[in-house]
Every structure is written in C-alpha cells, then in structure tokens.
Amino acid sequence: MSTLEEHVDVGVTIDRAWDSLHRVEDYSRFVAGVRDARTEGAGQTHLNVEAGGRTRELDAEVSDRTGERVMEWRTTGAPKLRGSFSLQPIDQGHTRVQARLEYDPDTVRETFGGPKGFAQATAIERLVRSDLEQFKEYAEQGR
Image (cartoon, rainbow, N blue to C red; front, top):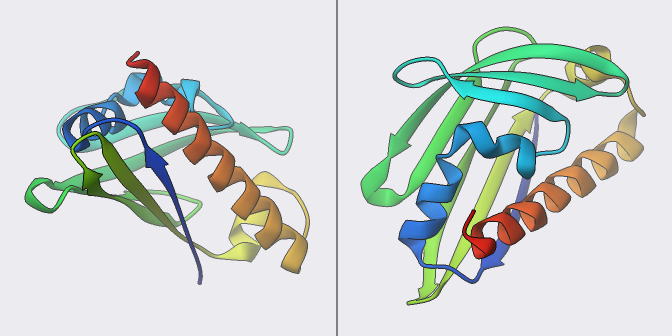
C-alpha cells in the first residue's frame, strides 16, 4: 500500500470548508475525472469516474468524526482505495484541508491505466494537488 498526503489552505471558515466537502453532488466541480456523484443513503456514495480513458462506477462508504472534523472514506468494491480529509482551523477565516490517500499502485494502474512506478506516484500526487486547489477555488467562491 502507498500513502499520499497533501494539503491546501483555504480562505474560508472551518464550518464552510466542512459543508463544502460534504456536497457530494458537487464533486465533479473539483475532483478530476468525476462525472457524476451522489449520496445513496446514510454513509453511502456513488461515483461515476473517468480516468485513463476508462469509465468506472465506484461505491464508497463515508464516515465522519465531526468533532474532530475528519471525513474518512473507503471504496466498497474494486479498486480498494481509502482515505480521509482532515480540517484544521488556521484562524477565524482560514482552514487547512489535509487529504490522505491509501492505494495499491498496481491496482490503480490495472483499473485506470497510466504509468508505473515513480511516474505513477508523481501523476497521482499532481492529481490530488490539483483537486485540492480546485476545492480551494470551489469553497472560496461559495458555490
């Protein structure tokens, strides 16, 4: 298993960042490759994702540790992915969003295609970083 951690500082309150993170139907606005996302009941999310020229349907379980401002998620089928988003207040108007992704590089490559080895890790890191920057823009615009 490989682990990737990235963060971005967002110019909104922690409550606003938390609310933005929970608007699953808007994930296509800030997560690359997500074509459609919806909540399917308590703690269940369905994503239609396109990556590496392939389209996949992914289901995930999502749980919150609201008091700690941590959202954890894991896919319920293939590929096996898991991660979390942790929010920490910087000051009254700024929040740090920390993303953590755990994945098996071979499984990701088999499922979505793409490069191997270091090139794959670099590509995933760029993708997560870009998604966080897009989230920043999304949250700050107050959509």
